[in-house]
Image (cartoon, rainbow, N blue to C red):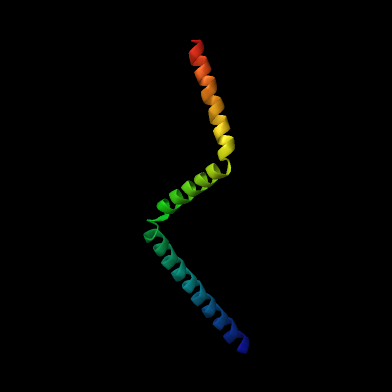
Amino acid sequence: MTQAIGNRLYKVNRKINCSVIRFKYKLWDRYMSDNNSGMGVVEVILIILVLVGLVIIFKSKLTTIVNKIFNSITTKVNNV
């Protein structure tokens, strides 16, 4: 008798837990679908910050590469 009551309580508790989990998932899904308007802006700002950081770190190397490219362009234009 006690075993049957325990099994029944286990099944009821399991159903309640599953219902609570489903309810929490629905709330989370509704929150995320309604609240994602600013994500694009944050991503763009992070990308810009990373690019600016890379430019600051590799500034000297980038300037030498750009100078070499422009020098080769000007010499080729002068040859034509």
